[in-house]
Each structure stands twice: as C-alpha cells, then as structure tokens.
Image (cartoon, rainbow, N blue to C red; front, top):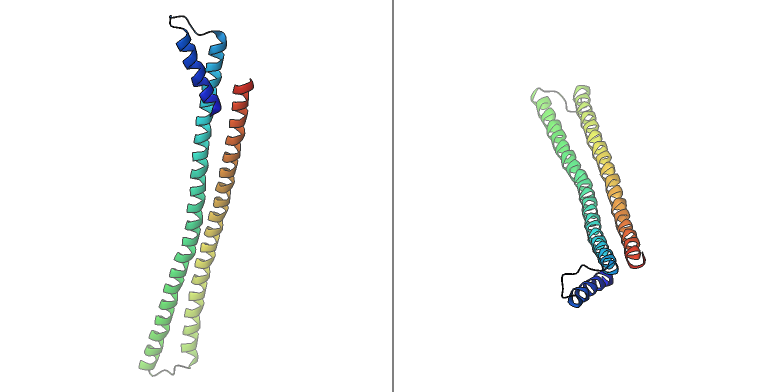
Length: 168
C-alpha cells in the first residue's frame, strides 16, 4: 500500500510542479510505472485470495456431499429393511393361510433367501456410499491443498512484485 501512496504522491507533485504541457521526466515515469506495477500486483493478490476462498468453499461442499452420501445410503438401507420385514411377514401369513407350519423347511428357506438378497443389496449400497464418500473426501483434500498453494503463491508473488517495484 505504501508503494501506491508513494506513486500517488509523486504523480500529484509532478503534475503540480509542471503547469505547462511538458512531459514527465524519465525518473517520474519510472516511478509511475513501478507504482502501477505495484497496484497491479495488489489487485492480482486480491484475486488470488478470492480464488483460494472459492477453493475452500468447494472443499467444504465436497465434504458435505460426502456426508450426504452416507445419509442417503442409510435411508436406502432402512427402506430395504422395511421391505424385508414386510416380505417375511407376508410369507408367514401366506404359509399359515395354506396350512404350512412356520417352522417348516420351505418357509425357513424362503426367509433365508429373502434375508440373503436384502443383505447383498445393503452391502452394495453401503460399499457404493463409502466409495463415493472417499472420492469426495479425496477431492476435498485436493481442493484444500490447492487453496493453500494459491494463498502461498499469491503472497510470494506479491512480495516479489513489490520488492521489484520498490528496489527494481
């Protein structure tokens, strides 16, 4: 900010000191150039900081989406459990209506088959949700790292640019 203020002061004194239409001297133009360069560097720095904030927000969004994967998977598993329980109940009612003992081998085999199908479907849903959540977590870590790099790079570039403008 000092470089910008110094530029503004030099430009004001240079224009106030020359009431005629003569051009700036080489020294004044060099100072003006460095001041504009510093101002541009500050604007680049602000843009890079905004980009880093955007990357941080994207990382948070990915983390929330990963959590949402688990919530949706839990809801689907609960729905499968409800369907399984309803199916077992229907099987028992149907077996009783046909006069088949609820402990007979055919009723138990049907119940076991339904349980195995439900377990397989629950496993697929859970594995899929976990894989998707892990992918989102990896993306979130990548975005956080990119945000850190953007912040560091912007500070480094600003320092180099201002140093060059001041001493260069």
